[in-house]
Amino acid sequence: MEQDPLALILRTLGDLYIFILTFRFLLQLARADYYNPISQSVVRLTAVPLAPLQRLLPKIGRMDISPLVLAFVLKFGLSMALIAMHQGSIQVDIITLLVVTAASLLNSVLTLYFWAVLASVIISWVAPGSYHPAPQIIQQLTEPLFKLAQKVIPPLGGLDLSPILIFLAIQIIQAQLAPFVI
Image 1 (cartoon, rainbow, N blue to C red):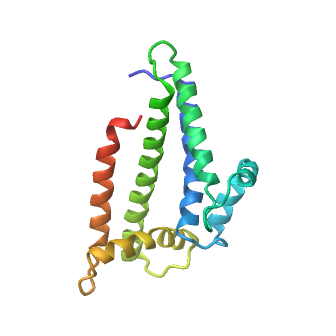
Image 2 (cartoon, rainbow, N blue to C red):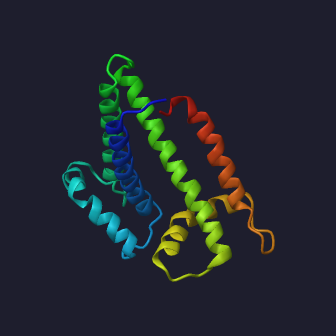
């Protein structure tokens, strides 16, 4: 399948920034260390476009939903731009595009968690208790998932099977989302 280089660049840069916005939301959701250098970088990269939205959108409890809303709007706009570039070959209505955008964003979150859990497992073998900012932020991001999964499958001695349950749940959800993801 031949792809337009402009579309490839647009999709790559758009998806990268959407990833950063989603990552900011998930760090906040997991209550990760705000003063971690990686968290600070994510906040700086997203502060300017989020400032107007943060004034408009109310916080839900302690949670700022503006990164997620901006990620959704950007994903929708990116999809519209890519469809416009291939005008005539794809006809889609707005409702369908909204559903596809939501499913794609949820799929991105699940993919991010998949790789974060995998990295967390590897870090627990290679460098447990590391003081480097990257392993710390990964551990903080995945800790709530592990605690939730450990309620279903408690650790057996020194063996924690909760990552297997998390991987299975992610794969099942992504399989159900597959028809709706572009």
